[in-house]
Length: 110
Image (tube, rainbow, N blue to C red):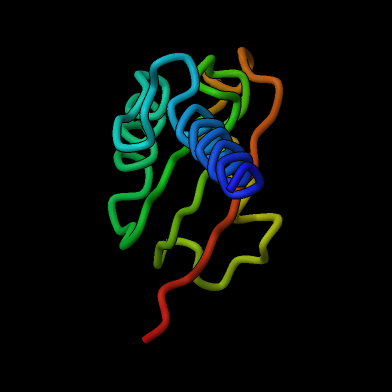
């Protein structure tokens, strides 16, 4: 019975760690940071044909590093490096205050 209680305590502790990692510094996964909203807005304006856009602050909410997934017909006929250069150019001002940026671009499948 003691071993069962210990195992239950470990599982409960692990669940607490998972919940805490999902809400880093009071930011739950279901909300967007100001930076995510700002970057998404810029990209929507620059790539109006984007069929999919996702911006995630992967720095824990402090705005130091973002991951961007964007799917747009505007990338058609361009190599991956050219697609990424377009995204970098669109975010030129914002990038200056970042430590890193992960970009994933795609052309919609038809």
